[in-house]
Image (cartoon, rainbow, N blue to C red; front, side, top):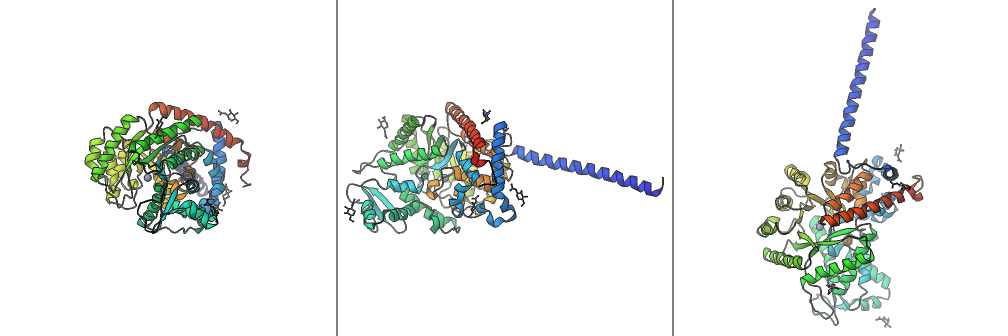
Length: 511
Ligand SMILES: *[C@@H]1O[C@H](CO)[C@@H](O)[C@H](O)[C@H]1NC(C)=O
Ligand SMILES: *[C@@H]1O[C@H](CO)[C@@H](O)[C@H](O)[C@H]1NC(C)=O
Ligand SMILES: *[C@@H]1O[C@H](CO)[C@@H](O)[C@H](O)[C@H]1NC(C)=O
Ligand SMILES: *[C@@H]1O[C@H](CO)[C@@H](O)[C@H](O)[C@H]1NC(C)=O
Ligand SMILES: *[C@@H]1O[C@H](CO)[C@@H](O)[C@H](O)[C@H]1NC(C)=O
Ligand SMILES: [Zn+2]
């Protein structure tokens, strides 16, 4: 052999070895990515033949709608304020698919902030409604004659003002602004600080709260909520609700129990009209700003209502801006005492601060045995708490749009949900207060999470798992869960068949 042949052979050997190294590398690379996919939420779902076809349709549209953003991020709507792209959402084919998808249950919504402002305005057509214009918002009250409540301006009948305006449509469109943070085309899309936005949020909450405290309106409101959620393909709801007395036109106040009973009655009526709707449970809330004696009163009220109306109350929670409110440790004596008789579904870690009492509420939510944590936004910063959440199988109720509107996160690609999904945590998606920003019940939240937060590769398996999680981690008894799974599976099969056969979804070149 001459020198040239030897070196040729050596070269060949190196090339073979290099290609083996390359193969091994690729195999390891693929294995690592597959491990991550398998571990993530939805990774263990196996799609059947029809679901696979539907998934291909979904993913073709997802890629088409996101494709330009990867090269040209200025077009990426989801890194902007929700209000800046909200009115375009309906045009998205991915959204249209998600809207039709059965989504199981909604587990984190606040009872008076669930309905779109357009529908609230309709309720202001009820007779005897007075309005008081305050500093920035309004207060509403139903009464046979001018209300005696304090008012910095003066009480006037809404019907008179609407009539006197000469332009009821303009009047309503202006009136609507008091019921939502979303101001349509007049909106400023800037992010403001958390305290400023919470102040505006409270103004909206006060207007809606005063409208819905009147018994006849509350009944209509409640039925309308169920209708809208049902249309959004939600078959069961857990509502967070404070306990207070509704009033009648003559000023009579009902006791707290009445509010729960009203929800029970309206839900039963709705189920009569829509037999595959499973129902409603309430998570009774107490304001963080009220003291522990008041909290004990709430607890006692819960005890007696639970005895009289079994099945309606799922548990207890505390509400209000966590950064500025009392921490869970303040309520600890009462919570420790109650923890064996009532389930906790606690807001915790709904903050961007690290090391503050709001952040550390996560510790208490875990130690107190919360069944689910509301938001848990701060959790990724706490590895030990994250392990505890996994070990105790505590579900996280994630509300992405709420976190954007209330100014915790500006670009949803940085939302911690991405990590929760990757870690396969027990996540449920919800919408918190969709009425306060005129969002659809939960479809907008699914859409933003799917397109803006989740991986480019995340597909129908993620969406299905999120819907299934909402059933698994609900407060329903076994029998209720079984029924909800049945209803879900039936609707899911129909959904898949509809997607496959919908001609408007076939061709991605036409939109
Ligand atoms: C995405 O864009 C790339 C190039 O920018 C193109 O090759 C690809 O076909 C596009 N994919 C889809 C699904 O539109
Ligand atoms: C993004 O916004 C643009 C215009 O603002 C709109 O045309 C487009 O449909 C939006 N895309 C999505 C996915 O919302
Ligand atoms: C509305 O105003 C007109 C006059 O502008 C009046 O004739 C009418 O009675 C008012 N209707 C109501 C319901 O107050
Ligand atoms: C609920 O329905 C029951 C039975 O019809 C009725 O007796 C009760 O007054 C209703 N309560 C409320 C709050 O509507
Ligand atoms: C799959 O879809 C086809 C066509 O829509 C339908 O006939 C069939 O029953 C579906 N199969 C399943 C398992 O749902
Ligand atoms: Zn909440």
